[in-house]
Length: 113
Image (cartoon, rainbow, N blue to C red; front, side):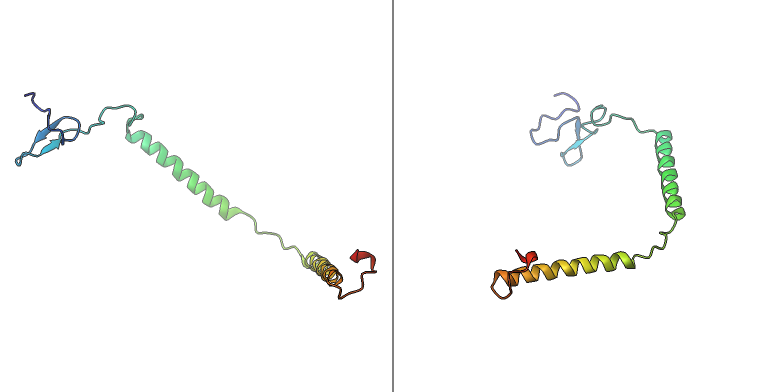
């Protein structure tokens, strides 16, 4: 028998060893050293640089939000009144057309045809 290799079909893949109870235990991670699963090796300097970039961007975004000018005060009363009146006129015309279609109103008016 080869040392460190399990021939048990129920054992996990990869190098294994037996514990005191005779159960197969994985010695190393089955994907250890596989460049597909670990394309960039972990390094503390790289992690620190990325963390610093995230911190600077977060602080910059917060400062940008705080320094945004407030919306200028515009008097929109005229615009709202005009839009409301237009909507009411349109609703009045639609109501009159529906009345004319149902026979409850005079259809001789030009806007109802």
